[in-house]
Length: 614
Image 1 (spheres, rainbow, N blue to C red):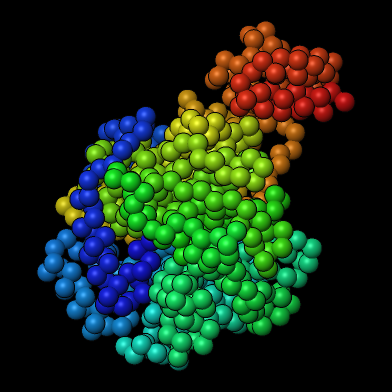
Image 2 (cartoon, rainbow, N blue to C red; image 1 turned 120 degrees about the vertical axis):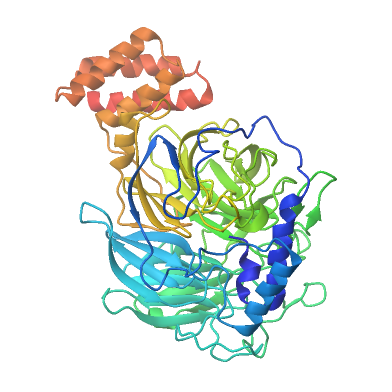
């Protein structure tokens, strides 16, 4: 959420909040072929606990309210809509150094060994997912400082802290002084081996705090883990942390801007974790100029007012391909992480319709990446019918020879209301063989699943949405992160709590595709760390390819029938190996005539039939 600067708890930053609210009225820019139109989601009744719901292809199984200590006594944060409201908010901040507009908001999630860890601006909670029913709360840790994004590796939990109210001891005894020796902004490390007694064992201070962070495994040493820290807030005073200075690099070459933090963690001594590099990943590759990418501002009359590239909001690593995708304010970038202590930029991309490059998600093949644009910082209504379809959307880029090329935009297709904060936010890949599906949070726009198998023609295939928290006034809420985690979708709802959802067949998603996705399990799943998925040969995987090819009418009727008969027999316990072998040959022979997306599916099905016929 790029309200980030406003959450430092400084009075000056609250002025940015007011400006962000006023920006909701800016003129619309150019759209594309996609049209944002009303549908079943557009007129849902409002309410914090009783809002109307609409869904297609997604079923809500469980909703859990927030635990004690994480409930906002008010409805939540409502951005100021007038000068008087802005001044009142600033006065409230002056009188209370612990004040944070989103002080009880749920944030990012991680999964480890059957436990779901949910971050919050006030700490984090853990839920047991192994009971067979609704998740069971097993741990709550109050530790203010926001955003509270979490990751887990074994018995270690990592937590991002950015706000000025954060304290080394997780306490609330803050100070209004600019320099505070007990202030903490950076990455905390907790020992969670005993869920009844979690312990903070390290606290790595950084210059801009940690808005988000990324776990990066060492390619050969299992005892070494790197953490990329993404700081997006202001630079702290040198008197508070000696390594920190502010300013543009032309006047201050040592500025803490224009870099990320690389933290090295030896897993047998995590208490000694420390920053080992602050690489200049935005530097001009020819001249070495530190500020080598987008300088900020507008690229044209109708373009977005785009942020300067002096930070990354998210960096998503994909170790199997040796690359990371960086969503870095004014640019999307590609990093070589073969030496994770020294990441190096190999490609970058700019687009005038992107206001703030927020997050990156690769497809399973590593040939495409989805960049999100958090236009308005996550606190504005940006999915109205009159808003541009290319602003606050997903931008899908392809990767060829380690070079990024933008291909298309995709935005939530449902027109949302003026009291619903809505823009592209966090999601991950649903492991359906033969397709690139991404489940994604859109704040109060709900949860949407996008098919970007053809990066030039992305389309929504399923959704779940609630009405606004209030029909009269915008209160910040909705899904912060929506992730596919071992067979279910988990959504951290900013204001309401935790949702658990499952997929259901519809015209765009078959029962076999869902079953194939549900068969993929992982012990740990962390945000911004992708691992390549493989599927065991099964009738559901084969049927998934057949269902996809059937939707596209990509197989001759006779071939489709014969293939269906083989899959049916296999499901019944008998594989016709001769028929499977013949089909493999027939499919390979016809694959070259198909369009690229269908060709990949045909070849995958042919290979599968070849394996089961051996």
